[in-house]
Amino acid sequence: MSKTMKKEKILNVSLFVLAFVAFALFAFKPAVNYQEAWVVPDKYKNMENPVADDEEALEIGGELYDKYCKSCHGKTGLGDGPKAAELDTPSGDFTTEEFKSQTDGELFYKTTFGRDDMPTFEKKISDEEERWMVVTYVKSLE
Image (tube, rainbow, N blue to C red; front, side, top):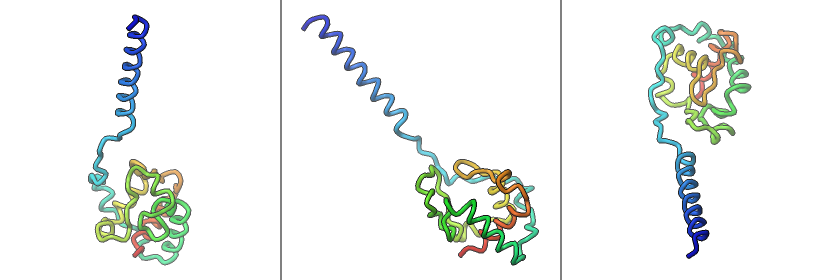
């Protein structure tokens, strides 16, 4: 085997190894437990929803939900919206007892600040009362 052929073989093997390592590093996402607790400060956990029993708030909350939330969380809150499959984190099911056991304040915090694939709505829904209306609506989903 000539010297040129040996260099070419070494180069090819090196490129193969480099490509394999690059693939291994970028193709596989590390296992992440997206069920980790979403820590909500006590200040928010204990907040009272000022529009919890307001029928008009429920209606407006539904309209805001349709505009901002339905694409990921689905029409009825099952987490099956058209964008849900594109997310790295589950979009959740708003009809479960686990979800419903959260305080309105916890949901307000999560809606306001977001995390991972859940965006912050502090600017998109800048009116705090309207974010409370969304909370009221999602708590009504069955």
